[in-house]
Amino acid sequence: MKGTSLTHIKHLYWRAGFGISPDEANKLTELSLDPIVDRLFECPYPENLHIVDKDTVPEGIKMMPAIERKTIQKERREYGEMLNAYWLEQLAATRNPLLEKITLFWHGHFACRIENIYAIQELNNIQRKYALGPFKDLLMAVSKNSVMLQFLNNQQNKKSHPNENFARELMELFTLGHGNYSEQDVKESARAFTGWGFDRETLDFVFRVKQHDYEDKIVFGKTGNFDGEDIIDLILANRLTAYFICRKIYKYFVNDNPDEIIIEELADGYRANNYNTESLLKTIFKSKWFYDEKNIGAKIKSPVEFITGLTRTFKINYNDKKVLLQMQRGLGQILFYPPNVAGWAGGRNWIDSSTIMLRLKLPSLLLSGGVIDFDFQSDDPDAFKMMEMHNRQREKVREKANTTIDWKIALSMFPENATRDEVMNAILQPALSQVQKDKLYELNESTLQKLLIQLVSMPEYQMC
Image (cartoon, rainbow, N blue to C red; front, top):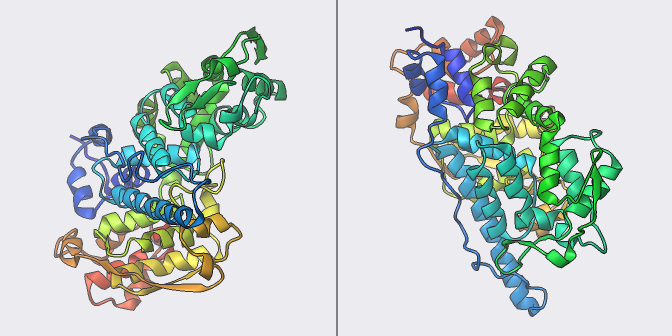
């Protein structure tokens, strides 16, 4: 039986998850590629988030006395931080790395942010539930979710005053892409979504019959008494939707530089296979081109991938959960807090002069219990509201990493006789040049522990 190279296994596990330990990777080299890929789709059980119940934090606090309102707002922020830390730690410990990775993709694709922590928790669980199934099921569930209906103002979409916000973002950001629909399509689709709302007590989807426009609409050149579900069906019938989703998935899992020929082929298969996302991802991960040299080590890790990969590899325990939030803020990606409805831009946008310095410092600080400087310079007051940073918005904040690492377990990833080259190849995705290797040799790190810290502090560790 032909095995699989260590390079390809590492590539697969970084793209379909958050990395793999060297000892686990070595065990898989005896298997052929297909069963390795299939294993990733064998989810033991869904790991839904559950930090709050529906009534944990009261809603409708505007009419409450100021002191009570302030207390509830503080509780809401605290639960938001707890939910953020919980998911980030789950990403690092999960037995379902692929399911969590694709859920993270949909989290950015259907980007929303509201104050109701229970509602955003449940939206995340919906995205996880439908993450690998038909895209229609996911799209329909998200479109009828209270978070989306509130965030994009469809609660205000009524026959007498149509609100176009949801219909526009549905086409531009979630399905067809900019320029692949007309203004008339947006206006007429908005009429079709009139009456879609949610019960503010239960947060359940509600179709408000008296608010719906039952007259004919003209969408994509077709005329009919369309409702919201009809519009979604019309959008999915358009091949450009399959192309838009596949292009975005290609950039997320394969390479930021799209191969249009491959994407067209993927889109044809995606549409022909009822938009089944599991089948699409299996096609990608089992394709020869996925393992081309140009795709290996070619993507910049997102902040969440970077933090999760480190945590997962070294089994880092964060004794102060606030550090998790501070790291995300400093690196430019806070879970449950996208910058806007378009989500995070990704790619080269992850790196600038300040974030690269923090990225290079963090590994040694986290693995050695050091002190981290977070320099907050933001024009978004909501971000500081979330993190209770009102009084230090323009200050440098020093936080003790306060982490615990079981180095005995971490070092056991390698056999006792592992060479320095073997350690380098196991930890880094991009291949190092001989000049880079020589510089590492010159450092003459005396222990495996010190060598590992040096390797994950290199610029090459930012790539996957």
